[in-house]
Image 1: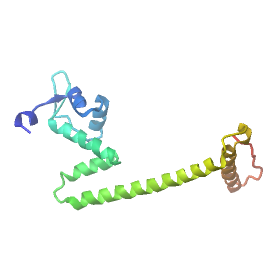
Image 2 (image 1 turned 120 degrees about the vertical axis):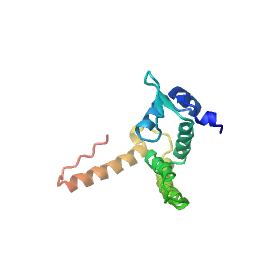
Image 3 (image 1 turned 45 degrees about the horizontal axis):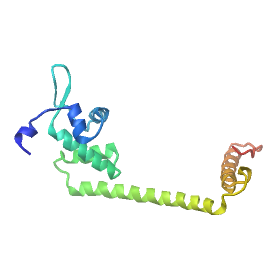
Amino acid sequence: MSSHLSSSLFSIGKVAEATRVSVDTIRFYEQKGLVTVLSRTAAGYRQFGADTVRRILFIKRAQDCGFTLNEIKELMGLRNTDDAGCIDVKQKLQKKMGEVKKHIAELECFLQALETLDEVCSGTGPISECPVLEALDLVEEKTVTGLKEEQGFSDVGTDPI
């Protein structure tokens, strides 16, 4: 990158346009300490350096990989830590991979439950006899019954919602 570009200052609107994020998003990132304003004009308008564009693009790519803003801030902070190494980034990556795998397993359980409900429903008949709604009511009734019994109530209603 030329020294002219790296010493240039950009308005918040230009940064938003270059990164395809909203001005409000850039202000939010500033508030969270993810980007910094290099200076302000006499009228008080924010001015950012070219590094801000790179940082925001990094943030967006990291979000696409499932990292939270706090995790992204930690990753970005590692670059400024003298004793940090690639192993630190790798550990954060592996932790995120574990979280994603756990989430996928949970989603697969949800999908299996939905497929089971789909199998019991022919899609015909009146709504009052819908096996999917009846099955969901049974789950709710068991939950409500368990909670009420836990609280010492014996009169548990079975009215579906």
